[in-house]
Length: 226
Ligand code: NI
Ligand code: MN
Image 1 (tube, rainbow, N blue to C red):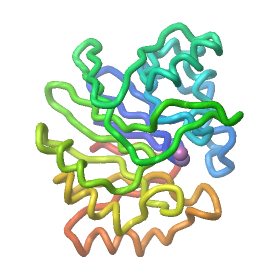
Image 2: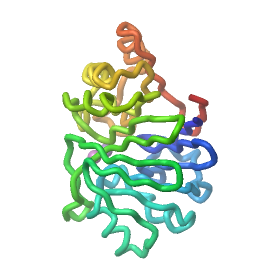
Image 3: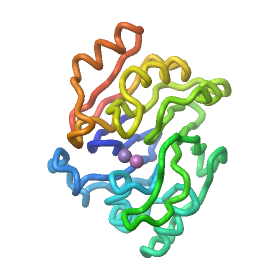
Image 4: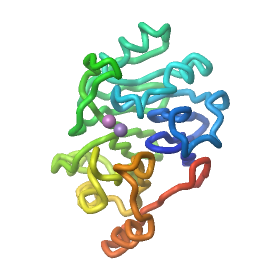
């Protein structure tokens, strides 16, 4: 798999010959002004919840790519109102299959509303799996013990976890999450973008390392093989 970081909680994951983009928030993120929204044309667009730091560029990317958008029902209805017709509504606990990939929607302990305050459905995360790869994208969440159920049925290669604290779990709880998930490789997200979530990178990496877990913090625009 190949992972590209677009800032905040937005990543592109390429597996086999398909690309998946999560939670696009690029134009509104001053740290991500090296990223060109017009260049982002995934096959799949996965949205974890309705907060604007997760969907700000979703409509534009869905329109220019005709990506299939997977999200909770209420978020899909919002996309529909914005003129997007290629969407796949889901809810927590459900798995959707497309070609040889499956997307399972997992719980997240968080809120979810649109910018105008209207209801955005529940917040979630995703497990993405094909015959060779499997990873977990937690979305915005607190630590919850049922993360152990996510790894009880499958072996995860790695996980995207929020580490910025304040709006989501921070480093200490993310380490606990990694243990519940049985993964020793974490890609950090949801840090540094706003004042409330600025973190010390080296300290975070060291804290994970002490527990035998690799924390990967990507530069915005960086691509790695994982
Ligand atoms: Ni949020
Ligand atoms: Mn957020």
